[in-house]
Image (tube, rainbow, N blue to C red; front, side, top):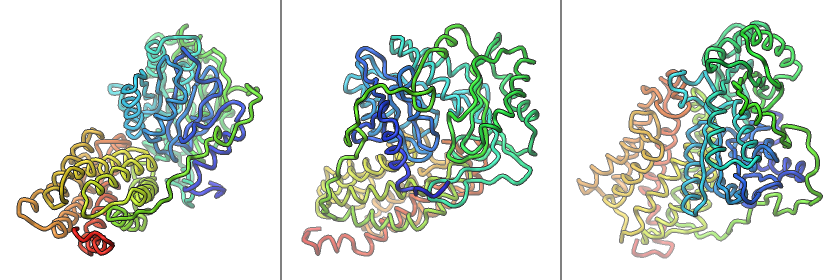
Length: 579
């Protein structure tokens, strides 16, 4: 990256600039990291809402406009938006005929969009979800549902938007989008890794004379490395891998040759003739090919080829007009000049500081986790997108601020619970991604378990942590041994339970349980991921500790040290004599 922005300001900076430049077509959703088309909402029309992490422009915000998406919700770099952001964006776009959510198949997106859909349903707003699963490198043809969504997002979004524009029902729009997804396949190649904002080194490097095949769009390296190919050889590799996946009887295909951010258009054009020749030699007719950047990966060098097997119904929807900043020339839709509020200025936060035990302990944890941010990123980059350290530090900063605003008294479990609930919500909202959702659930559910008790002792905390652990497992669909933060959390909960039965005082019990969690986190290096992106990469992470378990062990150790060092005592001296 150029260094014009850093990790802390990247999302705000580019979204502000995007809306400032294209305010005639899109508006910022007030209080949310989302944009809504100025054509939306339209009463009686299904609203198509897309989204995911930033770093992929023109996906997702650049595909908002008449005939395509009605709104897009944006997370941090390569990180899902939070459920709160999805919910607010959906409310801004809903026209009363229901909402179609469509996004790539990634754990964090599934969790946060799913939570938002539940909240909308509770308020009487119907929704459907279509996951994009086009990447053939991330799963076998026998289990296409586990595949990730990459550049084929564009085809699915285009079909869904056109179906909604012509007045189809919510069920019909969802069925057509699923049909498009079922008939879309993508395969890509990388020539060099991408660099996260604020970082100086790419997430992975490619040796001279080599390239990676089967890459993702979140900075992951490819499934296998090969020697550099000519345009003709690369075209054969891309096309031939996709041909075996197309439905029987396919005669024409929509073609998308997608640049990943650093590969020049001229290079893609140089590759395209060989692709078309290969397709025609296989008896296929390329239909309205597109060459350009549609779903990028920051400054990654590389490209991908997507094919959509067309029938008459899908061809008609693919042909339908649309008008968005990132796809099709734009014309002014309105003379309206956006107000600062419409540009999405975030509401001011309550700056009141109340401090307290939860704030002090989380602030201590933030310091320890922030010191390990680079190492957590390194662990995550082995089989993921390398942003775990940044995400958790960002989330903990928000959690510390929220706990400070709410305040907490060591003598009042209800106030401790309220502070943890606020901190958990803030962490999930700020961190996003699967880790943000899981960490947020852990804090919130622990807080909920403490609120109704008269005091917080080892038994009460043990019970609350056990229930929170169950909630984390349910939300993530994970179990101990899947190489997630549960591999540190469950041993922590088990040790607390044993110490509770033995009558151990809370500071001693916490210290012992944190030591167990730290050892368990180190032991995850022997495991192979069974959940999330890393599970699709064939054991690349074996021999490396899980970043989520590692960061959780740091947090638990910091909290235990804070309690043992007298955080409760300091809280009592500040005016809480009964603590």
